[in-house]
Each structure stands twice: as C-alpha cells, then as structure tokens.
Image 1 (cartoon, rainbow, N blue to C red):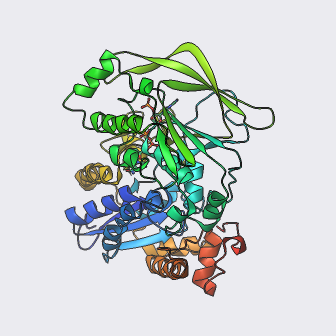
Image 2: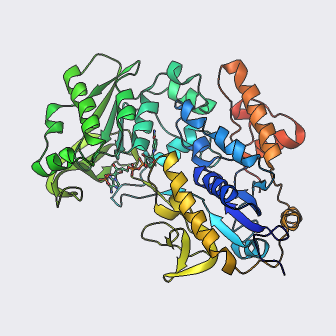
Image 3: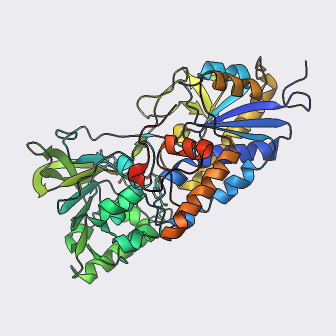
Length: 474
Ligand code: NAP
C-alpha cells in the first residue's frame, strides 16, 4: 500500500471549523505538503467563524481578511462541507474512518460565567449573545435585549466589551451602512440607553482593551467618554508593569484615558463611563434586573501577576441591562478529550492529549487549542505550529480505511443533510451583497440556516428579517 502523503495516496485531513485558525491551518498544509486533500466541516452554511459572526459590523475593514481565506479555498485540493454538525450529522469516530487526521479549529463558542447571585435574572446577558445577535448569527438572532432602560453595565475590559459598549453608544446613522442585522439596527434605533458603564476588576494598567478601540470611544457622534481622575491612580506595582519595556499597550491606553479625563463630562446624549478595580458580587432585582452590587478591589501579588482582591467595600449601581464580557469558552465534543477547567481540547503543540498522551490523528488549532485570546493574525503561527506537528507525525499516522470524500457526501445525504459547498457559499455571498445594495449596506445577511438553504434551493427569500423563517433545519 502507498504511504500517506504520496501522489497515489494523498494525506486526507478533515478540518472542523471555518474561522481564521481553520483557514490558516489549511494554508499551512498546502504550503508544506503537495499531496494533501482537505475537507472543511462547518455547522453553519456560511464560512469564516468569528470574522462573520464576531467582528463588529462597523469594523468592516477587518472583515476583508476573508479574501485571503477565499484564495486558500480556491485550491483544487479543498472542499467545503457547510451545514454539517460534527457529533450530530457525523461523529468524530466516523470522520476518522474517512480521514487520516482530524484538525479541530472550532473556536470557543460558549462563555465564562461570573458565578454570582442574580446572574440569570432577566436583563442579564452574555456579550457572546449580544455580539451574535447584532451580527445576525443564526444561534442568536431570536434573542431579545430590552433596551428600554437608561443604564447598561458591561463587566470585563477586553475588546469584546468595548465592541458591546460602542454598538450601544452609536447612533443608527453610524451603524446603518454596515452589515449589522436589520432587526438589531431597528432595536438599537429605539434604544433609550444613555449611560454605559464598562467595569474592570483590575486597574487601567491591566485593562485588556487596545488603544485604537479605546480611542474610537472618544470619536462617537452622540456619546462622550467619562473617566474620573481617581480611576487612574496607579499603585507602585502597576507602575512597574507600566514601565516594563515588554509592555506595549498600557502606556498607550493610559494616554487615551488621560485624554478622556481632560475632556470632562461632555454634553452629548450618551455617556460611556469607565470604572476600574470593581467586581460585580450580586445582580439584584425582583422580577428583572434593577441594580448591580460592585465590590471595590485592591491589587495583590507581583507585577504582571496582579490579582484583584475584594476590600469588602461595596456600592450599588442602578442597572437596566447587564452584559458579562469576561471571555469565551470552548465546548466539548463527543469522542474528543476536553479540559473542563480551561475549556479547551488538551494538547501539546496542537496534538490532542488523552491523559497526557497524544491521540494519533487528532489535532487542535485556534481558541479550542490555546483559549480565547489574540487577534485574527495570532491564529496564523498557532495553526502553523499544529500543522508542523501533524506533518511530523504523518509517517506514523494509521491510514484511514475509506479515503473517499464522495463517500462522506453520500453518507451525509443518506442522513438528510443538505451539504453546502463553497460554490453554494459564493451564491449566498452574491445574494447577500445584492440584498444589501438598496440599503447601502455591504451585505444584508441571511440570519437563519433555513433562509440560506431556501435561497440556494428555491431562489431568494424575502428580504425583511421578520419574514425570514426562524428555525434552522438540520
Ligand atoms: P479578553 O481580552 O481576555 O478580556 C476579558 C476581560 O474579562 C478582561 O478584562 C478580564 O479581566 C475580564 N474578566 C475575566 N474574568 C472576570 C471576572 N470573573 N470578573 C470580572 N472580570 C473578568 O477577552 P475578550 O474581550 O472576550 O476578547 C477575546 C479576544 O478577542 C481578545 O484577544 C481580544 O483582543 C480579541 N478581540 C479583538 C478585537 C479587535 O481587535 N478589535 C475585537 C474583539 C475581540 P482580567 O484581565 O482581570 O482577567
């Protein structure tokens, strides 16, 4: 029998997921081995993961990275199996019968919890759900966010928290010509939110947001940033962090924050308040959320490992809608080892480990490998590392018994799965762009799998989101 990775028997890899880490893994495979075939599996009909469903609609330029992914997908050694849920439509064990290696690049789809009383009160939400909702993600398009109150509190100070604050702070005109879901634009146009609080458990030096995103909060049409001088008092250990040559972000952030202090409280309709050294300890309300209790923190430990510790001093902040934006979390898959504590697939350089031992043929890349950190570009070296491990292992990988993609397609068809190909995606892409034109939007997204499949199989469906079917079909 020919060895895998040869002309006669190309290496067969199933990539699970279609976001940046998935495409960078495919690119690394194509660059480093000639005789390879990659089939990419994605549970939604549409590709590109968080670039489509996570990157904020008003950050359109960032989304142009999909051109790179389109180029990778144009390789004749690539096939796309969209609308296929691994673990439901086909199991991981079954996949291993058709592929020599399965590389999971399925991201971190869930979110971390705060573990405080009242966290599940109506009015308390996750940033994950809000981001998915305004981006027209099928999983979240039916969520409801009551924006009839005046005060929103967002806990967490990463760039996702800033995205949530910015979308709440922008006027409809600032969002209209983006690919924001129409229903979200309508709901935001009716929003009565005036005060937006972004609350961090540590200080300004430890905040995870970055300067361009923070600066943008000072350039909004109808919202002023508000920072009180006391918020920027810096303890000696934070000062040491600030002055460390390796720290490239804190000083830039601090300069923007100091600029916000100098501006005073402003006169625009909305205010974006930034609070540091506070943790939510309880969400209060009878039938729905009414306030959040914040405990004042102090920092303890060594520079770059400073931890927030409660002081016992609390304050209660009125709150009509609350978002926790404290990080994403991976979700387990049957037949794949999972680290419950970190919410990742345990791995060493991308080789998935079971009890510290690599499982032959199983690999991970991206957030499911390293946790939810880094920008889009961070995924490139991460995926390259995983592919290097995979190719090092190739001579010893047990060849799969059925190296046949057509058989995979037939199996899925026999189970009633309507596989969406990359050509199908190109048709959906064109339809979305066409639907967006009369509205001045770069695209008007389909927001349910059912609407996407109907558009592919029966021609375009009605444009109005309220006319779109709301249930995804398998
Ligand atoms: P993140 O950057 O890790 O921020 C998470 C925030 O949650 C931190 O402020 C963290 O504080 C806080 N936090 C965690 N647990 C908490 C708790 N129990 N109580 C209170 N606060 C808590 O994560 P993210 O904002 O979800 O973003 C994920 C990644 O995507 C990041 O790498 C981000 O840069 C990237 N991203 C980039 C962009 C962009 O480039 N425009 C946009 C969106 C996202 P501590 O620091 O104290 O842990």
